[in-house]
Length: 435
Image (cartoon, rainbow, N blue to C red; front, top):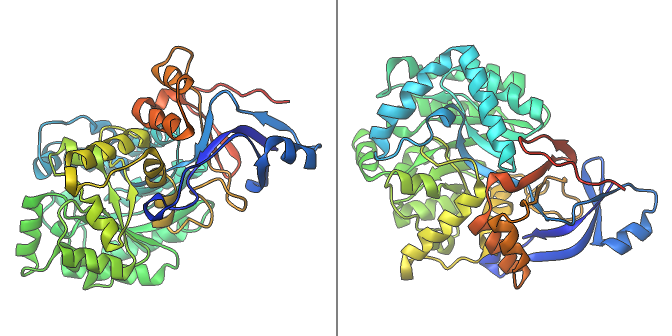
């Protein structure tokens, strides 16, 4: 099949001099889910006369969006505003997470969660799972049914949290191995080793996480780090003054397959460790703003050589839309003034697509729409008269058009989503013309 569309992507890093790539009448030949030719539509069509054409020129096509930190059990508590992190956990998140022990309830939440991802155009996600293995199973089931690229796993804690959410190092290891045996490497799924945060994880539990990582080739490691100043103080007290990053690093858990969420308040030494280990950080701007956690120091991360992707968080974040997260990231850097990093819409697209793919070790497969990549894509098609439609109709350049996408775009503008060339449904669906 040939996709005919205006295509925008960022195959090279704008933070390192890369630019937005835009083609107004682009042809993408997709065979067995992979882009095998790209160029002006007329040229691609001339070379492949027998192929069906899917005409998406009314809107624009972007790479599938990548969410590097999103909590599956928290979808039904979005909007609990007015509290800092630890209070919000006690009053909103943790009571809801205890409900995940009921499998039928967890299955309904997983359905809501996956629908939310798809409706927002998110095709790849590193999902913070549940403390209950049965709930993680239904999360994997839902992701597999929809064909999404998802990594998730059992969330583990052995102190501080309410008793139903606690485990032991031995049980955590055993349950993780069972989940990984069922799901790791199945279809587009991977396992993610997931202690909640070192605040609720002893050295023994973190050591069991390290054992699981060593046994699972291709598994990811994810947790939280340096989100809230009070949290950081308590972690230091529990670990004899160690830095938050070091609580993981001392167990060998900081590496190329590690994605640590937030990192709003890192020390220079911690940034140096993250860079030396080639680890990644998930920036969750709406969550940071909603909880009052602080303004993310993107410039310090970039200058230290730390890879940054984007996360919606969900729960503390305010929805699934990576477009909203990109816009909020832009706002945060503006508020930081000279300490912030000026961002263009190309930077925002990179953070929401290719940077996330890099963080998850999937940059050979997804993140942009180059030849050889999987056709993971989102088709944006605002309704006539919609503010985004008006904005796009008056855009002065592709970069300006993309700026309007981040400023005005919502989940209602997502008209189609593809993963590996497979068309997957969304709540609003307009079948494009075929000819």
